Image (cartoon, rainbow, N blue to C red; front, side, top):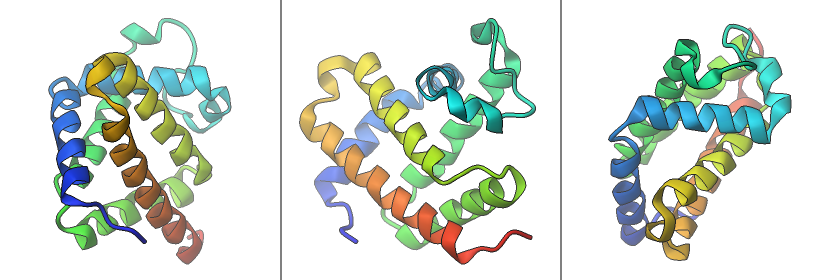
Length: 154
């Protein structure tokens, strides 16, 4: 597993600071885009509306904020990878055992986040910055997949 370089961490934290300025709005955008770009993921959101005027739906905004807060915890621990892994392990166990979400849905979410970053930040989300994020999401996917493999359904 290739860890992030200092330059990668700087790229990620710079962009993350901008995204996390408005976690509810940006999180809502990410969740709605997940439903739009990967409609098969809607089946796993049993308590959140997935159709209709989602822009005004408080539960979509709430879940979007939860996504942002979870990612913020990881971003805050880029220099403490063991802690980041513990955060991801808890997230993976809950999504696997409680929500029965396939791990591939995390990759869908990561792709949506990359697309939203490019749309919101334009040229600031350069190829170099994007590659740092792709590297991060690859590491996150590895950890999430390892967590899925090591946990049994309770």
